[in-house]
Length: 203
Image 1 (cartoon, rainbow, N blue to C red):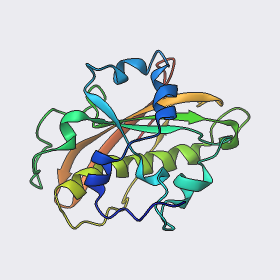
Image 2: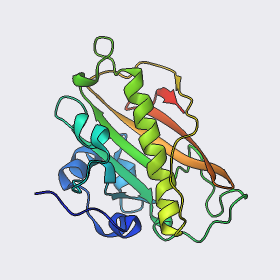
Image 3: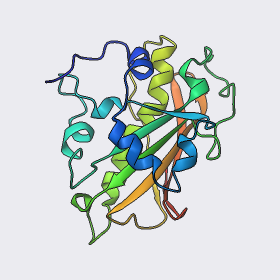
């Protein structure tokens, strides 16, 4: 049964629960475990693109690569303090806790399977680009909705630097943050690292 269309994104993020099996899977991994500890600054939140909501949006992320042989599990973590952020004026640096690769706004864990292969046992670079694009939307989108801004979020420019192959099967972690805002524009950065700590791609 499909769920109703999400009308209030902030309420959805705050009140819906991500799949417990995904939390159990990622929290059992040594490199991910610290982000799930009770002392962590982060908490799991639902990922709208993979949430059944009864409309044709997010078909690529939510259906096409939401399969056992592509991306069987994908989990978003958000800073606890950001669930109720203060208003952010346009044209100034992001206030509050500075965001960076060491203090990202969101962390996304992804399980990669062989259905994403470009080269043998390697995730296609175009898939990584699409994932960065979607994850940027997650990071910026919550702020837009929670502040009540009437902005349509679309990507104007996306640059990806591929540092090392992403093997399949494997698990990766994307750290994403808003670096600054200029008027209607949000500038975001992200880094994808493997379980071994090696940087695989940046955007």
